[in-house]
Amino acid sequence: MVITLTDNFLLVDRRLISPGTSNEVYELLITLLDKECIAVKRKLFHLDPIYLHDFGYKQYDEFMTLCLNSFILEKDLQKENGTSSICSIQNQVICNNLNNAIQYRQFIINYIYRTLQIDKIAIPQELIQWIEITVKNHFIETEGCDVKIYNSCCVYKSLYFCEILHFIKTNKDILFSQLQQLTVSSVQLLHKSFKWHKESIKYIVKSMGIALSDFDISDAYFDHPNSIHGLIHTYRVVLFSLIIGYYTQKRRFGLLASCGSLIHDMARKRDGICTEHGPLAAKTKFNLLKNHIIKYSISETEQKYIKSAVIKHCTGESKPNEDDYFVVSILKDSDALDRCRVGDLDPNYLRLKESRELTQLSEYICVKTLELGNISFTQFIDIVNDFIN
Image (cartoon, rainbow, N blue to C red):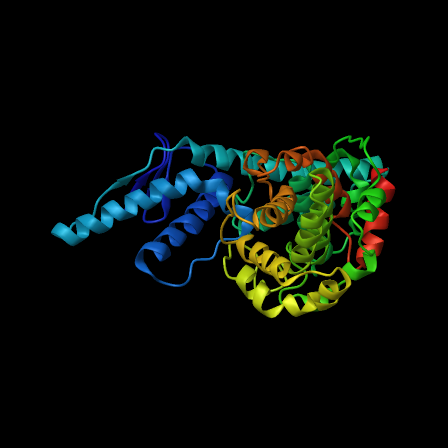
């Protein structure tokens, strides 16, 4: 197969042919192509189950579509006359992603430098070289161009920075004491300035009529703990459900949505795209809400709304004329508000007007709580309330 990427790039049997192409560009581009082409081939020819991580899914939609069309064309031609087509893909998106990946890697490196300098730490040359090599290799090993180009918000940058720092700190080959104290919270350059001039978080939660301790959970409740869909993500979704319920004046629906939010990702077996964990959670985790059902007098009909919201948060929508619409919409919007951590929060896709007004708040809460560990919901609300109000 021959793929023409641009006038300057030509890929033949995984070999990039281009005058003056640097090794850096070559490595990143090959990584990008390997990831997406293999994914497309698996989808078309029914090989191994396709798995794409959240961090790379929507970034290459245009590229995937073109690849898909090319592979379909090639497959059809092979069927009809036994010949192989030449797949020509002229797509600037690839070059944009490539440039963005290189720039983003430099962004990470620069932040590490600047943080060390802010802390007045002398930076030995071998540390600089090691950081550059480590970050470069990390990008290549984790699918290279795995960076969103359309919404590089502070939360997404912070999360990626967290990942880089974790990788650096846990590296067994070399340990620089200067890096061991680095945290996202210490890197103020990543944070947008934000002021919340409305009611306090504690006031909103209290107004919703819940006891914070009723929403205390731990990593042990999750089938796939320590993931981007784990404990702290769940707490944020519960909180957003309560806030949306408060501002829509649909407090009962907000309460029901918060109950659904508590279990919505507990049955995940992996990160990434998955339409099975919602129905599975409704089936296997719903018994965790038995005390909520009794304490908050949740009727059988309302229990159906909760189950519907948990199922539909990853499988579908409810129409405005359906009885479960607000519970489903509040949970889905609350979950979507936390998508800023994977770089593709688009307010235009939020269902409720009140949700669209919470995007800055959600980014701020997310970036401030990225590094929290196994804590209670009560502690989580205390922490959020302190830095918001």
